Length: 249
Image (tube, rainbow, N blue to C red; front, top):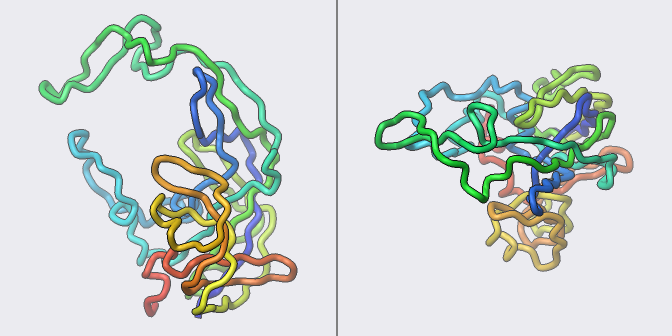
């Protein structure tokens, strides 16, 4: 039995999730991934301690977090207003250890030390970054076999999200309902998938495309998990959830 709950969060500070660079004019996404929400809404309590090796720093979410320790998952967080209030702020000097525009620092793998070099022409030293202004509402759904785990989330709690550690506050927590499984598939809500995962959909709409994943919604012929609370619903392919969600507690 899988329980679900609908959460609404509000950003208390300016939020950026860089999507692309158009001539040093950086735009931001209107959503965040399930992985980012898991890290934020669990306060990284299941993070696996390890030494960081800059030579072999290959990120693997399943190895970075012990999902069995806190068996909960979240749908991608979508800002309710996809044209949420945004504006641009100027920046000067990026990719620098010491703030200057003619030099930059890089890690030398041979000496294992920082080295100073002339700034490459392709590294911007000024530009603008689009950000989502404070007071915008983001929707996500939490899923777990543990009803008591979902019940720990209460209105007013705050969490830090994103590389800039923007504070988000829970402004609404719905009642908890039991999800239904539809083994023959059906309509899904927004979900992030690998680029080649689009083959699993026979009808789809791509909302965002990056080098790593697609944010899509559509129809599939495989099992989906669906939750409904009043007039709101969410439906995700079963295999988009971590397998631990279906294991005995």
